[in-house]
Image 1 (cartoon, rainbow, N blue to C red):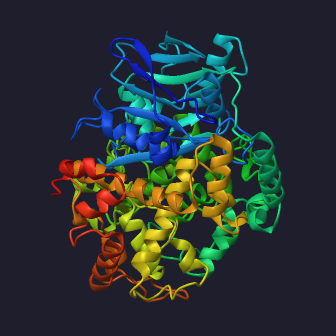
Image 2 (image 1 turned 180 degrees about the vertical axis):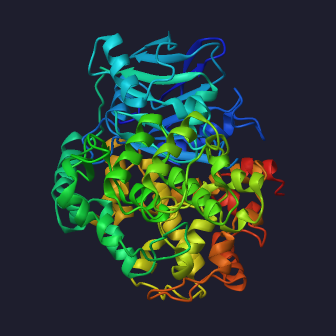
Length: 614
């Protein structure tokens, strides 16, 4: 094969051994790579109903077909395991040099099971796999771990993927960091690494990556690189994703004060424009990326002087408006701490916003919070709380469980304003006035997620009436979900989606020329549907039912209080209609279970028995 190596590295931490097995061209074509391949390997390796923090929960890293090639934004990898936050499929993406290194070491994927007796890190040096002592790294932050491992190996070319202290303490939304500032951020995969006593996976790869038709691939890629410098990606290059702040605020779709509001009075002070003018110190790119969307922010003075962190929209929303914080240096400091400890910024902001509302409603008191006055907008308190969450100290031990478990344990009506879907804290789109988005977040298999079901585009761009629930929105959400699954499995960055005139035709050609595996546009589209159905089957096997495709009670009970979307919310009747419309479009029954006919059509018929389909 070309592009692919055809090799999967299997690691058993319990016995300290590894082996390499070959995967077929057919498997690569059916699942492509990234999230698709990782999910299939995970499904086959995990026993049903496994405890996410047990040694039997396999952690799978899988590359896209383009990693290590010249394809723009193609150097990415997907990671999958059963999520300790949701109990369902946990999949996340990261990019940059680690992805290239794994391919150049000779592998398409790494599947890790078991639990090491003591803190360990893996060093994959081409064909040699070493199990190294990591006791001296335990307790270190992600950046320091990266530096220490490179110093120990004596090679700056080595790429490191690691967890911070939050992964070690099993914070359920701990992330995995590679190449210093790139995170597989969502669903708590860092806690899975921590449960295995696995501090890091370091890779040095020196082998060449070959493509099937070099000249044709180069021609296509040069054209894509040029388009990636055009208007379709301009907002990402100039402001980055924080350009969304003012847009969503105007639409009354910017979740504020734990979703009590959909507009933020101080939006200008946390906008992408304000950030660029006052705090951006440099703009960087992932490997093989012509866009450069990562805006690194630096605080020059004040109480948080010296703080440095990349800021994207989701981090900005969660650590800013959602917590009612308008002091930008505090947002940078909070993001820096999350990066140091290895925690998902969206979940961190979401659980703190919930705790702030609990405090203001009298459900928490100062003595519950080690003296912290956790009012909305109190940035000093929320910075201190991040330390407590990461180290599971005091109230941080409760919050480290995520907002779903924390609210269930606290009770007292706090579940009413716990903003999550399937246990995953929500991204920054107030769906009360975005009905297609509401459906997309509810049905996303990894929990409420704008990346796995990017159905916000039709709402925000005015392609549909965002305040209405009508027939056809289910099909629209399905198409967006399948489209995202392809990007996450090929893998390409979704920021380049706008440069394609006919994505399926162009992507199938690029895939064929790169790998030598013939695939048509129609087959590629069907592959996206197959991967989405596979993730759904995984969830059903783990206990999913229709009630898990839900919206937070606040979305369905509390209308938006002011702004252009004033009065908007999602009624029970509207949501049931949209959910049934989606299931029908998918070819699933009224309970959300795929039919035998659908599974056979998608070449997943062998899994029907696992979910009781006959």
